[in-house]
Length: 389
Image (cartoon, rainbow, N blue to C red; front, side, top):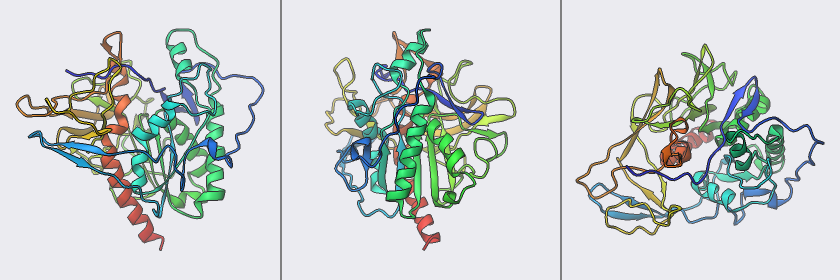
């Protein structure tokens, strides 16, 4: 079975009592940091109308079960009538507990993997923010926590959001997109700044990946959000999608970082492959970058693929399950040893040669459902624009 080596970890974020709770240690009590000036373009990874981190090559090779390779091009829609606002996960390799505002390759790369493709449906906005770093996460995991300021990144994103609303939004509908720490920050922002407020009418949807969004058991609203329900249709707007993915063969263990909730609550799971419920085919876009050991993953047996992304129709399905392991998106890979393409996918978190089951497929939460999510945003945007003529 092919596995993805542990090249990057993404911090766990959850909502506890309305605050972002991370695994990065105690909050700093130092003098408040200076407010970021989001009128300065260098503080944005993506800002509509620029050549920036979202202006990237998203060409994909579609690998059919019979081994046929088809190149799929991609086109940005600079005239999109709606916006997407993205908060990225924990990727910063800065050596301090909170990151600085200088984008490194890791920030640019996560935009490539998780956000830029939405540019076919919306204008793209992605602020830099002083997030809790991988350094702080790893220190905490080793038993030597660093004093990271959990409110610093959140306040940055709130400031960026308010700048966007004042200077760029102009009454347009907006999709909020986040993963892991980014989802935690966005969950708090939605709760404090959007839920039940006039701006809620402009919310097309919120896509919160790699997190445990709290909802009461058997209900769609009333946990993290008071008025924003979970999505159950591709044409439903003003709703939220959330999930954390695990292999069907490796369900969440007792120490799982996702899929758990306090008594009376559950972790929300909305299946991008079938929002109405049940199983569905994932339209995945996997990265075709070389792994740390220097070789690329063999997506098609014996064939060389040179595009940055790969799509494998029909190989992977997903279904939301709620059982003794928790509530999560169960990922099933339908490999066939006799056909011409890979029988498995990369994406597990591995340390010292061991799969870390408690992380699930956290590294590829976005990759797994990227095509489905882009299609959903397309349909939701059309619904929103029809209702707001």
